[in-house]
Length: 300
Image 1 (spheres, rainbow, N blue to C red):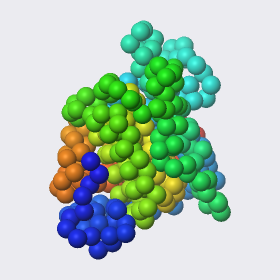
Image 2 (cartoon, helix red, strand yellow):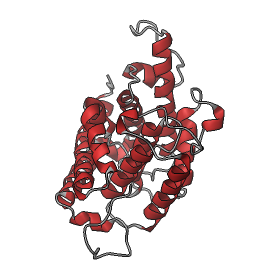
Image 3 (cartoon, one colour):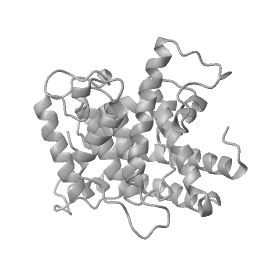
């Protein structure tokens, strides 16, 4: 469920700013902001930010797919991103049935990431692309993520019946009707709030994991939407932070804290925002490695 404000909210007209009063949340917002501000002044972002974004997107898609158990070598997914539709000779990666399934999931994550990139502001630009309402944005991300491995009838549509096929460790998901209502509420919440980007992204991410509105690929949609919001709402103007790297390194703690968020308790929500901030800090470090590699001309 969406988090409940702790006692009377001082900003009752804003559904999310009361979360800043939860223990540790302001500190989480500050450390995420500091990491992104320090990243912003890397030399690579003077002229080569597009290259850095492109590489960071591949790494985000790969790490996000790995969270869901689809492990694909970075050079393979980079080849997909640059138009090579199969592993390069000598890559040392055999495309058996299991690997092919993993590649379909990772390619879907890459497509969703590429779509999200079309809504990111240009670094230093004077205008910003208008984000669709959240519900529409999620549907389009899901259609991109699931194309080629989910039934076409499920693409971009909130499930009507049955349970989602993914993230079963998070417990029972709401029914299709309840899921649709909660996506609608989340859409209204995001439209109404002026809370810091970290808080908004964390709530969207956590709520989508809890609700799992689609038949599958819910994790990809949740992580891609959250990463987009970090950029579109100004926390990460470079668009290169890779929070997925932290989730892929520790998927079980990630899911355990997401389950705590799903309870809606103040402690669970605060813990989730905290680990989202930690992922942004780790993702900024990964972005710095990307920027260093771009400048050196060695992506590795």
